[in-house]
Length: 88
Length: 372
Image (cartoon, chains in turn red, purple):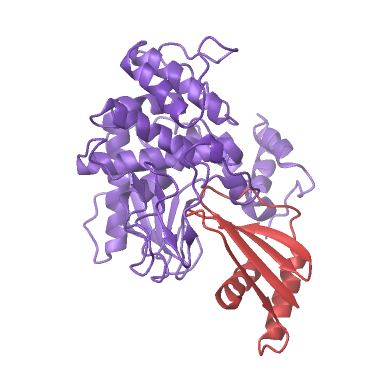
């Protein structure tokens, strides 16, 4: 499973993007679970967000969902942190 | 028992907005509750703008701020634990104290320079949360309060360090209660620019700097030592604040020729704000002296005058500042300097042209009625 996160906005307005492939990763099961939960919680289109808040585009195997701070679910937050931290 | 929302998420937010304002509380309350938690709370800002912007009944605006600093203790629940209230002595936590002092400095500029009593001009309490999340590289305004991360120490340091960042966040609140500029595209970039302009003025006022002495940087002192850059934005020279291996290069344009079209960052609100930022810098340095006095007053008149549409374009805003300068100071030096500043960033303010919205001259206390 290929998971991509693009974070835009924020006070600095600096975009960050990262992608990781779950194949062969020891935490693949956890990532798959998180990714499925995030896709299931799709609100349909980018939320309005708040001034200076981060916006996220999360793409899982070609399907894209949007979310924004400060209203991330636990699953969205964990997935975003894992991908942005470890993805390349 | 958990109350089931009467209006589920298939009801469009604008309909709920209308229902929430219904005089019949039996209708309005469930709609308001639904709005408040609907769609992961994403409509909260709209709701606060529409409903929460009413002055607190019976409250006389005080010349003293009412500050509360809370500690998120590295979690993401807001507001977190209240740790320092108004008049409380300083704590051992420097982040808490910086937020407290920064809110005070912001309140002070708005009051002394513009006669404004807090965010809503009715003495709204100033609430801020620090230590949000872990290694959190951001600060934001959530429609009700300011939120500051500690930074990761690798790229960003503590977001309470620069006073202009605190002023920037609080000014998002002022904008929400006044022009309510839509946070997308050009109006969103104007919203961002208001926060940078008044954030910078708050720092200049606190340091007692004239327009020539000020650095006109946003976020100076926020970048970690290993980052190649001086700040996050430069109002004086947009696009020159940083150029770094990890962060990339400051993408801000300083002229309409280089306006950036993008769907990300709400249509580039943190990018194209460089254009109106530079126009303000050009005006302030052309006039000289304290930037919060004449230049700041013209901008403040437009922000709070009630005539600016929420989806104002750069051109509409520029025309409004030309009218405001004439209304405040007559058609003299200030008016000419405003026209010139916008012209230098590629925005014509079309004298005698089409139906430019004119703002009536505004001697003290005689501004056009506020919106809403």
